[in-house]
Every structure is written in C-alpha cells, then in structure tokens.
Image 1: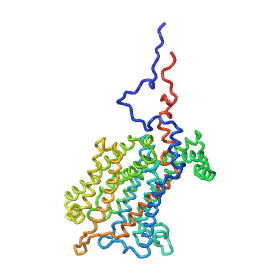
Image 2: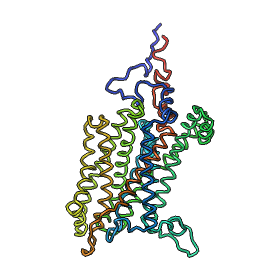
Image 3: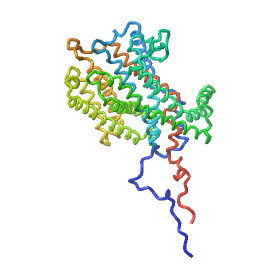
Length: 478
C-alpha cells in the first residue's frame, strides 16, 4: 500500500530572509501592550512638557486673535497690503494651511483604498492635523476681505437670497473655495470620527472616572465590537474613503483656480491644479513628520511608529518634491515657449528681481532638500528627517509667497510698481496661527488616542489566523 503524501502547509515554510518585511509593530507586542501604550498617553498624568507647550501655544493663539480683533476694528490698512500687491501674507497663509491638511486625507483615504497597511500608525494624527489646519486656513480668507461681518451674512458667501436679492458671485473662485473647503472639512471630520469610534469604546471601557466613562461612551455610540458593528463600521469607513479621495484632488485644484482663472502673468496657467495638489501633499507629509518624529521619541512609541514608517513617508516627500521641482521647470519652459513677453518677464522677475532671495529659498528647500532622501542614512536618522521636514514646510510657505507677491508687485503700469513689506500685524497673525494649530493638537493628544489602536492591532501577526502567532499550527499530524 502506497504511503500517504503529507503536504507541508504554506505557513510552515519559512520566508526567505530577502523577502522578509520589517514588521509594522516591533518586538511582537501583544494586544494588551498596544492598548496600554497608546491609551496610556491620554490616561496617564499630564507631563510637565505638555503644560509648557500648551502655555506657549495658547499665548500664540491669543496673539493671533488679538491681531485679528485689531484688524477688524481698524481696517486692512494695518497689513502691508498696497497697490498693486492687494494679496500678500493673508492668501499665502490660507493656501499654506490648506496644503498642510492634505496629508491626512491622503494617508487615510487613498492609502486605505490601496490597502497600504503601514498607514495605520500615522493616520489618526494626520487626520487630526487635517482638521486643525483647515480651522487655521479658514480664518484668513474671511479676515482678508476687511468687512468680516459680511462673511456670515446671507448674500456674501452663503447662497441665500436676502431682502435686497443680492446673490453671491458664483463665477468667483473665492466662492468656490467656500464650498470646496467646507465640504473637505466636513468629510474629513466624519472620516476622522468614524475611525475613532472603536478606540472611543476602548477608552470608555478603560475609564476609571464616571465622567470620562460617560463622555467616551456617549461618543462611542454604543459600540460593543460585535460582528455586526464591525461590518457596518468597515462599510462606512470604505464609503467615506471613497468620498474623501476625490477631495484630495478637487480642494487644492479649486484653491489654485483663485490664481489660474485670472489674467495675471505668472498665474494664468493650466499647470496650477496638479502642481498645487502635488505641493499640498508634499507640505502635508512634511508637517506629519514634524509632528510625529518628536512625538515618537517623547511618548516612547518607537515600536509602533517604526523606522519603516518614517522611511516610507520620506519616500513620498521625495516623489512629490520631484513633481514640484518638475513643475517649477515647466513654468519657465511654458513662459519661454508661449512667446508672451509679459509671462516671460514675470518668471525672470521671480528668479532675478527684487524677490530673488525668496525664489532661491523656495528652490533650495523644495527641490534640493528632498533629494537627500535618496540616501538611506538620511531617511533613518530621526533628527535629520525632522530637520528636513521643517525645511520643506518653510519652502512651501515661500512657494505660495513667491507665486502671489512676485506676480503682483510689478503689474502692467511701471509707475505703480512697489515692494511689499509685511507689518508686525502680518507677522504676528501668521505666527499666532501656529499657536492655534499646536493648541488644538496638544488637546487632541491629551484626551484621545493619537494612534488608531484597533487598526494597529489588525496589522500585527497575532491578528492573522494564518500566522503562528495568530493560532496557525506548524506542521501537522502524520
């Protein structure tokens, strides 16, 4: 009688070392450790550094609100605006903050649809960053009009007929911004909250005080972790990911129309929508690294936010930075090839005119610095990654400044040419917006889990039934 042939299960064959991927959670941490480590940041005693950082951030936010109050009570003359530079730091800051918010939606929605499991350790903080950046961005287009009370009155921005039958100008891209940014903020908030629900239930079950248990339980919406709940949750999450993905492309494309639909040399170009989207993702990932690299060290999260996560984000910055550099080159080529002398002069003026220092700062930060990430040493040294991420954000602010100010300060009438000088109100309003952003982020990390506990657990070997740590039997009976 022939001997039976025993097939070796595929999970019993060891993976070749060259195909072995670095795990997304190091040191084979169990589920309980993941819950304790992440939830413990919000549950533990408030550290001293948090109070110091919050005090500085609140001071910055109050400074910004003080400057805005001064602006409203006095008028936009307190800014450095003049003719022909009617837009300057206000719209620069608006576009800068909207760009910062793009990484959160990209990490959460697009990488979710592409089944990129490495997103799980960074998506929660990136989504929160998106919401706080949209809050900061929303301040500037309202206050730059001067008469801010019209922003909340029917007929100015809200499409609602008032007694005088005055409707908004639907052909204005500034009105398009209202719809694009508000839609983006609403869907991002829903997406962030939906992902939070399982973790809110975890915080509810771990809470000691009755107040915390009630508040977490209220927002957890009765989550029990049943099969039905997980099924509905995953469907809702996937639908919101599908809705959020077009927003990544549409929102900053609409913001770019503020410039592209005009006739100003340097603005009237069709490359702006994809160029702005690539730049937004570029600056957004830079801000994610700026926040997560120190947070990873301070909160001792090296096992959850691994070097592999940092490397992959550096590669995204390298890719989008290359796209931005290509767009810079194409702008000059189009200006030369188009044969329009005004367009060509606008770009020559950017590079060699009075604002040459801003242009070459932008080139150094956005084109040269990301290419350091071709080298593994640069991607794996946390202090170096943190430094480059700050440089990237500085460069992206200068990009918006160069696009706006250098295109406006010299128009078709040489007698009106002028040099823009920001006032202390310009500067303190912008610096204070970072205070508001940091205040919101610090409060978020103090009361909510900054990493998606349930999603991180799902990418560990223990969650895989085909893995030995997940219960798979090695070998088999003969």
